[in-house]
Image 1 (cartoon, helix red, strand yellow):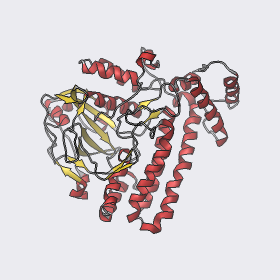
Image 2: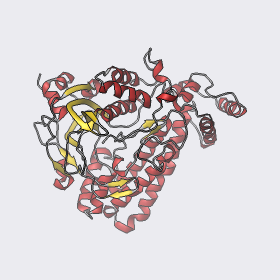
Image 3: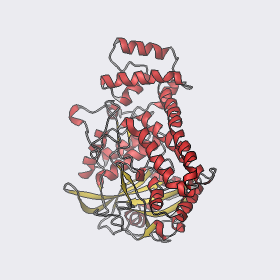
Image 4: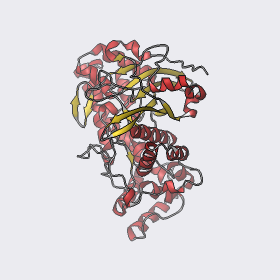
Length: 466
């Protein structure tokens, strides 16, 4: 079966300073582990052709696209607040972009080998992070969150050295684009106004054609990020590493490294093994998004009028807070069954979250239990008082059931799936992916996937996986 892959490489029109063209490092024995057939069909691709030897060769990097060379994109960024002047795709290659009725999408290989931006890394990925990103990004899509997606996971037949020998793998990621805040920072740091102008025009054309100029781009990104982070918060999702190079201009969630969903609720929850100071804790995500957007504004200043544009750019970034709070109110209001919540409902939301923190209640199951007519917290005067005030607002069960998933990709279930896959059993991964595809109405027989971890199952830290 012939593989037809109608790829372009539109990003290369920006010029060679934006990327490095190269082919992936070949792998020894590529084997297709997972293929997202519905996504393949959405992209206009034939799943059977992707399963063929020709398709697996493409998805493993062993055979580049016929039309052009893959590229590694360059960018910079603030990592945990510290400036890194040159980062770039150190273990990823952009195969190209594909036009669909729903827009243009990038296809990228992650774990495809060294590039000039790898620094001391080997450019590879092991199976665990590949499965984690596949499972979590597809779950996020099913939850309605703007996100990159996973098209395929391929075993390389090679060993990757991390804390020990681990099986290698490559993920094929689909994104609206891979332009980051850090992409703009890279050229701003080099005083390259021409590149900034071209990049802004490219981003506007790809993502926000209705916006006007670099200031319009900034305003659009501010609004997209306000909606995105509020959605994360409403699901108890922690990105884990909100560096500026991990914030996509498109408004999609990107780079699923030490990400996790909260089990026992506490607002300062951190899962990332490298976030020792809690910079990217659950309750800090909105603040960090605002900080990142300020860095984007600074990078865009040379093409927005320089110092004269600072007041307007500052005012634009400052709209993030109100936009985020409005989105937060709408999301959490819906979780409590309020179709049209008002600012007067914020104390109702805050009081419940405070009670949940005191009781160390499970985030997802608490809201789902309320949706299903159960009292999820121990009977107490504070809860009874809160419950009475909530009932007085006449919450809608239908609204709640659409806002509160019954199932999320719990950390311990992902770890179970990874450990089974390392041993050659993809059954738990496939079961989890299928259940997470309908999180608000999961299949029968998946009740165990709704349970929080037992003490011995708790995952205390997650890792970047590089």
